[in-house]
Amino acid sequence: MVSLLEMLPPIERLRGFRLYGAGRRFVDLWQCGGAAILGHKPVNVVRDLKNAAERGLFAPFPNAAARRFTKALDRLFPGKAFKVYQDWSAVPGYKSLPVWRPFCFPESGGVYSGETAAAFRPILPFPSAPAVIVCEMESEYPDGGFLPPFLLAAATRAIYDLLAEPERGIMRFKRIKDAFKQPLTLSNWRMDGIYIRPVWADAGEEWAKVFRCFLDSGFLLPPSPLDPLILPGELSQGEENSLANLLSLHAADYTI
Image 1 (cartoon, rainbow, N blue to C red):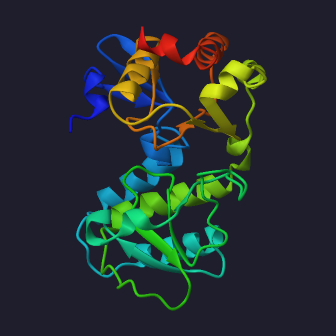
Image 2 (image 1 turned 45 degrees about the horizontal axis):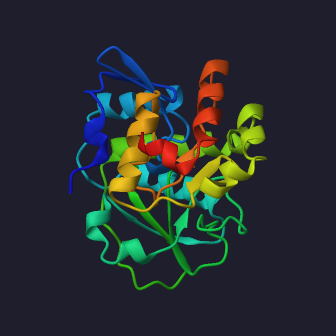
């Protein structure tokens, strides 16, 4: 299956919540499925990544970074146990686990808060973060072994940055709020805080047309309608107006 991301031109630079390539700029509403919820190229994360890389900490030997990463997870999920892997390919059946997303609440339909399940997989705020399963103290999941310290260092900093920025979860765009007062918008989309989900689009050709419509207007949607749109940390007035107008369209207008 061809990814809808192939509709993008080659991306040359990422900064904040925007992608740049072929002379165009795109507001990122996908944010790597939530892994870039703090933006691309966050200063503290890049610094810690560089520091670890300069020390040559690429090889998966025993390292102190693993202990610091677990400590950060303890802050994010107190009282839970963790199984950490370099990537999800080592975890059979992981797709059946509920997903935890930052700044979500239990009543958010389809967006799991992570408060009640015995095991779940969090979307951590760093695109190259290790795969993590959060579980009760007794778990059938095996340990994942040693991981590259430079990735653990960056992921650790990203978690602490997430904890330090609760305001990232505040929906602050008045024009978009106003759009969700309209019955037409509500018939197409559901908003839960900074997350927006389609309630009408199905995977396949229909979502491809919606994806293209937004992309032509300078907004990158998730390549799958199963992932929510994530409002960025900031938008210009023009970007906010354009996004509110797109969300207010009749479903049939996305196919034009």
